[in-house]
Amino acid sequence: MKTLCVDFGNTRMKAAIFEDGRILQTLVLEKDGLDQITHLLKEFKPSKSILSSVIHHDKKIEDLLSANTAFHLLDHQSKLNFSLAVGKPATVGADRLALAAAAVHFFPQKNNLVIGLGSCITYNFIHQSAVFVGGSISPGLEMRLKSLNDYTALLPLVEKKWDFPLIGYDTTTNILSGVILGMVKEMEGIVAAYEEKYSNFNVVLTGGDCTYFERLLKNKIFADPDLLYKGLYAISETNN
Image 1 (cartoon, helix red, strand yellow):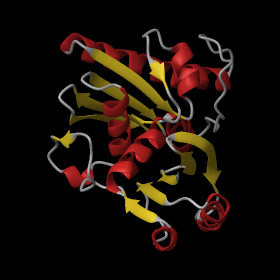
Image 2 (cartoon, rainbow, N blue to C red; image 1 turned 180 degrees about the horizontal axis):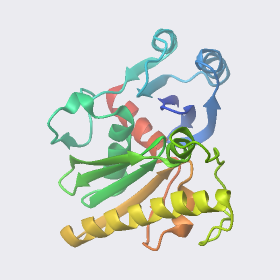
Image 3 (cartoon, rainbow, N blue to C red; image 1 turned 45 degrees about the vertical axis):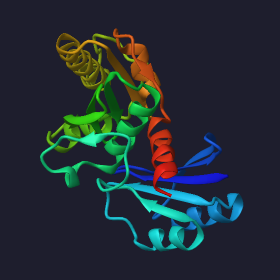
Image 4 (cartoon, rainbow, N blue to C red; image 1 turned 60 degrees about the vertical axis):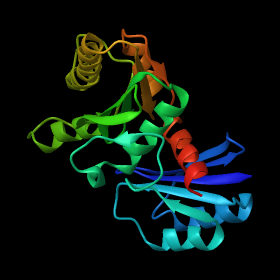
């Protein structure tokens, strides 16, 4: 049995095809995603689908998925394997719900901190009693690089690269060192603050750049770039 999991983030729209819990294919969608989703439906013929969206997406996507699959739109009212202990549950992003679901599924009965690297860095804390407590949000890598260009007169827009020195020797390497190592130290500091407060503590790093940051971080952190997809699949199994 196949399931189509679709994630609309602020920067990218992505999709994954599962078969009996195993990922068959992942891809980045172009434009509004409608044509590629249509192609995926014809090629794989999934029986179920789920959409996580933090943008104002084309509602035709929902109509298309509903017409061809048992479809579920993820939100705070979905059946989840955890409870929400936040002031306004409706404001919790669907992507964060999926990450929390995956953490509880794969690392049960642990105090889990899931760090999602996307347009923003989201720190998502799920208590060992399976309660999503909240966390924090800070600017992501591309947002930080772009802001230096947007809010200064002379600094260029630098593309991310991972072969940079500690001590920058020109403008580009100064920016890469400052932004990327700044993110590393931010993550290490936040992880350390949680470790001081909680025992039975587990950290998971996810997102497109997680394998690169895993190498730079001193903490022993498990990296899984597909964690969000896995969370969507688990929620789809419960809600469809």
